[in-house]
Amino acid sequence: MTASARPDARRNASPHLYGRETAAIAGVLEGGQYGHSDVTEEFERRIADFLGVPEAVAVASGTAALHTALLASGIGPGREVIVPSMTFCATVQAILAVGATPRFVDIDPATLCVSDQLLMDAVTDKTAAVLPVLFGGRPIDLRVIREELDERGVVVIEDAAHAFGSRHGTRRVGADGALTCFSFGPVKNLTCGQGGMVIPRTPAEADTIRRIRLLGVVQSQGERANTTSYRVDGFGLRYQLSAINAAVGLVQLDGFQATEDARRHLWRTYRDALAPLDGVTLVDVDVEHAVPHLCQVRVPNRDEVFANLRGRDIGVGVHYPPNHLQPAFAAWHRCLPATEQAGEEILSLPFHQHLTETDIDRVVTSLEQALKSVGGS
Ligand SMILES: *Cc1c(COP(=O)(O)O)cnc(C)c1O
Image 1 (cartoon, rainbow, N blue to C red):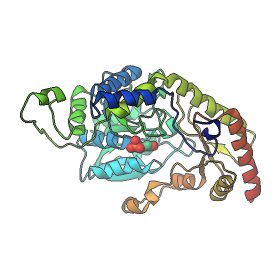
Image 2 (image 1 turned 45 degrees about the vertical axis):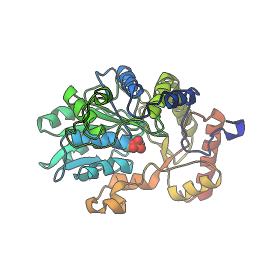
Image 3 (image 1 turned 90 degrees about the vertical axis):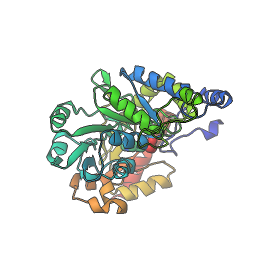
Image 4 (image 1 turned 120 degrees about the vertical axis):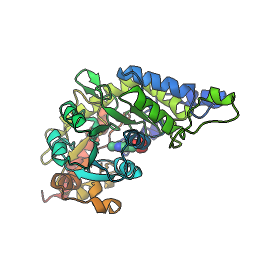
């Protein structure tokens, strides 16, 4: 990569590579085992050790993690899954993939996350699961309602796609007993290129997810080599994590401490630089405990500010347009005032590990100028 090609503030997000990923991929290509392999299983063990959990099950994407977690929880047609509208559309598509109905809930405007109260108020007899999103990496603590929901037979599935590495107190997200789904997509805190991981609650749940991700086929590669057949034991999908992707994840995990430190440092640098700006509210991620995935602000006249900043070559983004306003999800629309207001005000600033303090200065100065030229606030 030449110096001029360094991903800078023109990019909203960008993967960070440690350099050994290329060699790791080449090693797998030369080894000849591209699908689910020992490398995938090593990656699962290393993630489980990192989190401090008995096991982790690798899948092809974060969406596949959510889909298989819902399937393994027995959720299907006629059942309702409570989900914040303020999330990536993947969360909603996973619910539709099992034939269940999304019931959209509002968020706490300060954090863009659901609260215990908002979730509990939405629970009905039809509720099969609640699917909170750890937005921006914020480690929301759901232990209190999880006990209550367990008693009512409602499963809690955490969409922790943004929150790999974040902590609840001293434990990492994924290690406090919840059924947890991570994404290792291109711009997530840790990337495999594409990939995902489910942290199951029990060995039986782990087995179910392992069976689903390999087309419902139970025998291992080794066993299959010695028989003339294979057994299909149940429903399944082609959802395994390829060894090529797992090899990238292993290198990323080795470097994760640096990622963690860098993302916290960048977020704090933004926080301090943004503090003097009028009319800008930073969305709090609980940086003491989070490995931040996004740096978001709320601004007046967002669409004009967005266009103005794009004109200045600043890679701003919007995470996310509310799902209950999407045409595909119109059947499940409800009135969600905090989400709708956030949908009009949120702006994601460039946030990735290639940014320098000079880049951040430029973003903040440009934001200040954009707010002035848009005016009317
Ligand atoms: C990225 C993401 C997903 C889906 O993960 P993929 O790996 O892209 O399939 C799900 N939920 C949220 C909140 C995400 O940001």
